[in-house]
Image 1 (cartoon, rainbow, N blue to C red):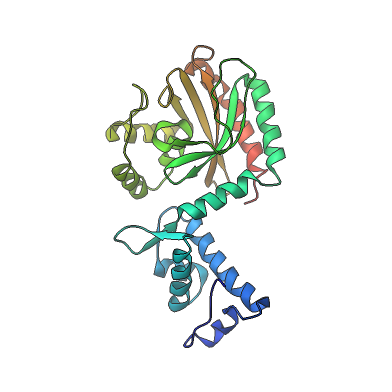
Image 2: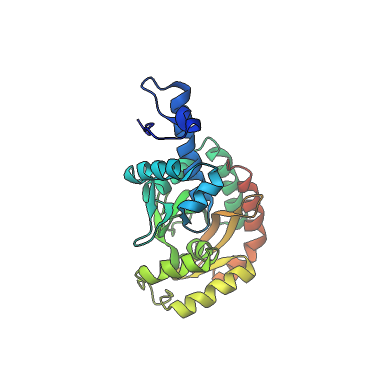
Length: 273
C-alpha cells in the first residue's frame, strides 16, 4: 500500500486514498505520487515543497504526505540541512534501468553500430546517475586494443567527457554544491582536480557544445562527447566516442563531431520522453 487516506483530508482528496481493494482509487493515489516524482526529476534544481505544490496543483498537506512516503521508500531525497527535494539514488537507478532495458534499445544500438562503422572506434550512450555517468549501451570495435566498459559501467562525472558535459549543463548552484562535496581524485596526471580549471572547462563546453576527455580517466585513452537532447533542448543523455590515443589522437577524434551530432539526433528519436 503506497498511500493511505487519513482523516482531515480535503473532500476532493478522498478519491486519492488507496482503498482496501485497490481499483481506481488506488490508481489515483499512485498517479499523484508519480506526478510528484516526475516534477522533481524534470527540475534542474532541488525543489521546495511550495514549488512542487504549484507544479502538481495539489494542496500542501497532500503533497507533504506523499513526499514523506516517497522519502521513506527511498524514492526521493532531501538535501542535508535543507527542505528541498531531489531525486534519490533509487529513483535514478530506476530511470537508468528503464532506459537500459527499453524496447527501443535495438533502435538505439543500430544507430551506435552505424556510427562505429563510420568512425572505426568504440562509441557509447550514457546518462547521469548521481555522481557518475551510467553506460546505457556501448558498441565495441574489433581492434585488439580496447577499453572493456559495458552497459551498466559507471565513471566519475568530473573525469569523463560525458560527465563534464552533464556538469556544464547543471545550474551553477547545483554544480558548485556537487564540486564542493565530491572528492576530486586524480585518476591520471591529466585529471582536472582544480575547481577553477574545471569552471573554465565548463564555460568552454557550453560555448562549443561538446566535451573531451584528454586521458583524464584512463591514461592513453581520449574521448569526445556530444549531448542528446529532447525537442525542448533538455540534456538527457550523451553520446561519446572512445579511442586509444595511439590509434586516434584527440585532434583526429574531434574531426568526427558532425557524425556524432547526427547520431545523437537520431538516438533522441528512439527515447520515450
